[in-house]
Amino acid sequence: MHSLAVLLPLFSLALPLVRAQGATCNVTTACPMSAPCCSEFGFCGTTEAFCLGGCNPLYSYSLDSCLPNPVCENAVHTFADNSRILTNASFYDGNASAYDFVVDNGNIMNTNTSGGELVMLLTQENGGTRLSSTRYFHYGTVTARMKTGRWAGIVTAFITMSNVKDEIDWEFPGNETTSGQSNYFWQGVVTTPNHGEVATGLTDTYANYHDYTIDWQQDTLTWLIDGKVVRTVNKADTIVNGVAEYPTTPARFQLSLWPAGTASSAQGTIEWAGGLIDYNDPDYVAAGHFYAFISGVNITCNDPTALTASDTGYVYGPNSTTNTPSVALTNATTNINGAPGLRGLAGTGFQVILAITLAVGVLGQLL
Ligand SMILES: *[C@@H]1O[C@H](CO)[C@@H](O)[C@H](O)[C@H]1NC(C)=O
Ligand SMILES: *[C@@H]1O[C@H](CO)[C@@H](O)[C@H](O)[C@H]1NC(C)=O
Ligand SMILES: *[C@@H]1O[C@H](CO)[C@@H](O)[C@H](O)[C@H]1NC(C)=O
Ligand SMILES: *[C@@H]1O[C@H](CO)[C@@H](O)[C@H](O)[C@H]1NC(C)=O
Ligand SMILES: *[C@@H]1O[C@H](CO)[C@@H](O)[C@H](O)[C@H]1NC(C)=O
Ligand SMILES: *[C@@H]1O[C@H](CO)[C@@H](O)[C@H](O)[C@H]1NC(C)=O
Ligand SMILES: *[C@@H]1O[C@H](CO)[C@@H](O)[C@H](O)[C@H]1NC(C)=O
Ligand SMILES: *[C@@H]1O[C@H](CO)[C@@H](O)[C@H](O)[C@H]1NC(C)=O
Image (cartoon, rainbow, N blue to C red):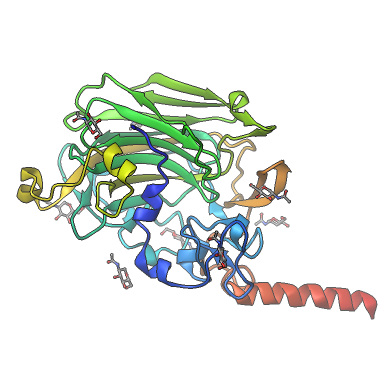
């Protein structure tokens, strides 16, 4: 029962505003030209909540409707304060130089001790907290130094997530404090059984910092704890009907504390999370919230094509092999308010201008 297929962090933290708007987009129906970007949550629109992080190119009007995904940058993120974190994602404009993370949902604090620690909060009201990196990475190694929550029903997670839902996980159901669960998904496909595994024998993950690493390379995916390999998956071993069901698309990394043990969750999810959340827990009563600590996150990029100074983003192209999108580098803006002619004229405008330009080009040749 441990390690259910967990795409739930996404949906349980869906922003109500985004959920309420627009036509839905999915594998059978892409977004219309008038609202070309398909959001993470499967709704069509033109604004930052649709065209930036999580925008799914496969369900958007065209493969280039979403803004390019900001390219990877090697980084050592520490949290002396939270100044590199944008606490309200609706103010994010796609400029990954301005912030390292955005808070997609929930609330954060800083302990201001031990050199500073980022604290993710979960309350009965806030629906949990999720932060996403502003930059994407296309293979590389990412490590988070974390202390997990220890309460039944609450899951601490450190994952990578691409816009087509290639996902690599570290997850910690709150009632288990001596183990961590690794998992991965290819394009959001939930397999039976899923790919979850449990690494046991850790010293208390609530009381002690551990380093949790996802080492995602083109041929091999490795999970490490405190620098020791605990699991390896070879791409060559993931082939099903000739298709490697292996993450290949640029991903953000996300940190979250999410309320899996709520009455509205599936029964299997509640059980996996260790039961329903108890808001009368003495820790909750004393602090006014549940919490998890992050003292640092490091990332080392390993792009298949070395990045140059003019590369700004990753873009999707036609499938390179069956059911596997190609990924290219671009120098176009990643910013929702970027240069006119790119996405300053978000959505409709851009597509219409492109269509007119093409039409004029064709007419020009005919005349
Ligand atoms: C896909 O989106 C279309 C258009 O909004 C909708 O009619 C259809 O029910 C959706 N399909 C699924 C499986 O959600
Ligand atoms: C910790 O620092 C933050 C700014 O990062 C500040 O807002 C907060 O008040 C500080 N907390 C304490 C307890 O000093
Ligand atoms: C974020 O900002 C928007 C726009 O000002 C506001 O409507 C929303 O309530 C804010 N969200 C949070 C969590 O503060
Ligand atoms: C992006 O943010 C950086 C740092 O705040 C700033 O210097 C730069 O001008 C911004 N770029 C754009 C295009 O807004
Ligand atoms: C990140 O890298 C720095 C410098 O190498 C190192 O001191 C620190 O322990 C690393 N932190 C994590 C979370 O890996
Ligand atoms: C946590 O919850 C799971 C699922 O209900 C259960 O199997 C497990 O024994 C619990 N672990 C502890 C340490 O209580
Ligand atoms: C490309 O791959 C996607 C899955 O990533 C699939 O849904 C789509 O049908 C493929 N397109 C073509 C033209 O084969
Ligand atoms: C951006 O790329 C295009 C070709 O794709 C090239 O013509 C242009 O010079 C590049 N611009 C910069 C600033 O590198």
